[in-house]
Length: 192
Image 1: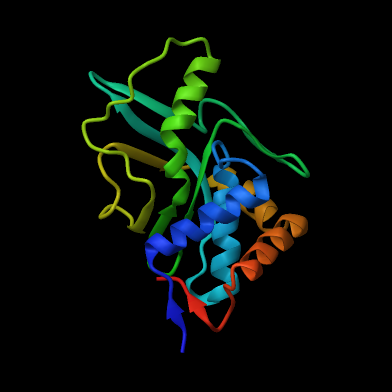
Image 2: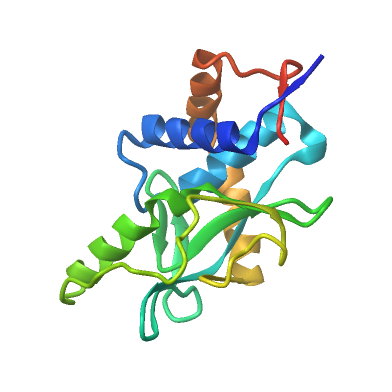
């Protein structure tokens, strides 16, 4: 009998694999988070597998009205083999079967915002959203996304980028090997 992984366990699994395959804290690697969730979900249960979605994300950072964002329509995004994604964008995952969305990279959003702001020459700002920024999003579109987050799909980039992420054989092998080391396998586990 398959054991469902809780959303929290799935988030922890994805985060630990991202950290392992990037050899980093995961900050700035939303494409890898999406790639890992897509591979994990396909390996465990094809019927509920996720696919990458490319677009924009804005996060309410502090009052009066300061938003941190990655706007795919104001910058550019491109997949370069062996380098990965470059440009300004955000990637999360979705499922066609039930409109479920998942973004496990939010755990790093405050650190990413502070780093990006300082790199661009901005002064240090106090991260103080009126409501806590969630560590992840998992649920049906509209019902689970708090008002402090604004997602916007860029279909053109999604159609360009998703196939490239899902055909990177070297990255997929690393992800599957990391799953194996954690004892996560098809037939034994499934996503919520």
